[in-house]
Image (cartoon, rainbow, N blue to C red; front, top):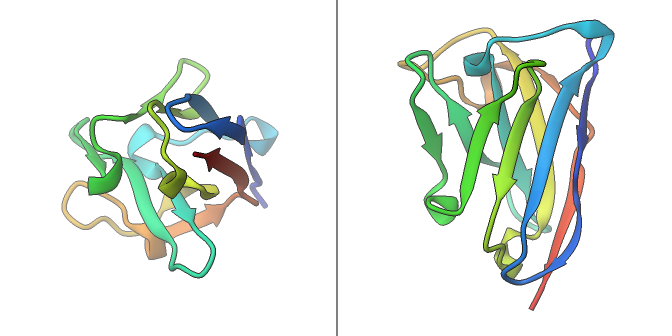
Length: 125
């Protein structure tokens, strides 16, 4: 069983930055297009935050466009650089991996086989 481990969450003031990182256990790696970032705020449904497509394109939630950047590093960890954070970004952020079905070039939430436990991001005003 593969475990995904997120790190980098924390508490920051509005306007601050955080970088989240996701690593898979056992040295397992996944293509960048088979990983993604999601988040769930209290009382809200989980939403997709950032995905990388099979063609190398990226897809972001409208609310984070221009502020968040998703990338995979040389160690195949999936990272999420979050700049100019706002209180509405407060949520538990989850990493997902291993897509079993693509919609176009992207893999969406229900189609990931593995999920991390999440890391809390809290942004204060």
